[in-house]
Amino acid sequence: MREPTTQPSALGVEHLEDRLTPAVVDLTTHGSSGWVNDAFFQQFDARPTGTGKIDSFLRVQGASSKSVAQQGFNTSSRPLQFDENKSPNFTRDLLASNVPVVNIGGVNYREFLLDVNQKSSQPYLSLDSLKVFVTDAATKAAGFDVTTGTLGGADPAFDLDAGGDNWVKMDYRLNTGSGSGDALVYIPDALFAGGDYVTVYSKFGEHFASNAGFQEWAVGKGVSVNSAQLGAIAGSVYFDANQSGLRDADETGFQDVTLYLDANNNGQLDDGEVYDITDAGGYYKFEQLMAGAGTGYTVRVFNPPTEYTQTTPNPDTIFLNPGELRDHVDFGFYRGAPPS
Image (tube, rainbow, N blue to C red; front, side):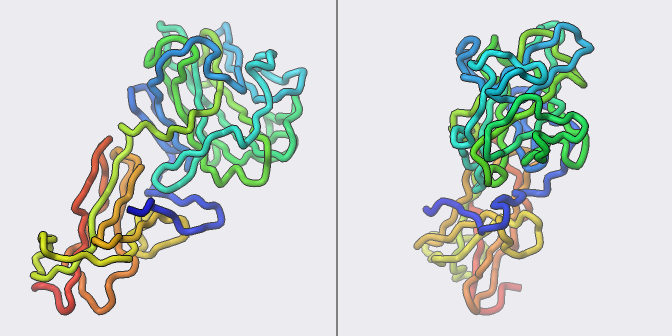
């Protein structure tokens, strides 16, 4: 079976569903996740590895007072501007080539890991600002403008707050100790074009303040989203000889028919929408699809068999459970009028 692919587009990214940007992404339960501005945030259950073992490129030192937020960005230049840890082991330049690319639902993303630390008596922490800059040269210290949100005069390639005041809520208790990681963040790979260096600016504590330790960023492992959070859709395009609307064992499939996920429900295969092409048996499959009530998939046929009439209704929008394979999403065709 061919791997699903995408039509080329100017950005190389297209919505997989109609994503409504929330004010807050709540990652306070195991396996929780959410989308903001085409980026995917996922609570991460990692095996503890000990402090510092995640090879951070940005460590923002924790605040001692619950009324104090903390912020910073990664750079190898000194002196530092905000609350960054001064050690080059924890705060340093980051090459874009060192951030792994993973594929989710046919779209490539760059994977980052966030590790947070809080007191058990008040374990919640908010990520209130996240801006990712892609530049040709390494970032100089003291280059971030808090008023304009720019870095050295440059706008971010990704901004959590684009289009509204968005933030992420996390619960320190879901993982044990430091250095294990608490959230995975996936930023569209298309936004990383045109630069060799990546600078991540983040701010914590406006909604739920930092009260212990530090927060640190590292690159992901490139393993993609936890497979338990993914689903798949499979089916076939076939000759419905008896016009029953169900594929029987002796009914043959149509090869080289394109199926696609109609992200905007306009009945057309648009640039960036995920598609697959049927094999010799008429079968197709979409894999690595995000599960959950907020993520729906509309499967449609792009190039139906010439001079055939579809005998099966188009399926409703499909919502997958974690780990689910929704199979037998079939499309039958018959030469002539469909059954009345």
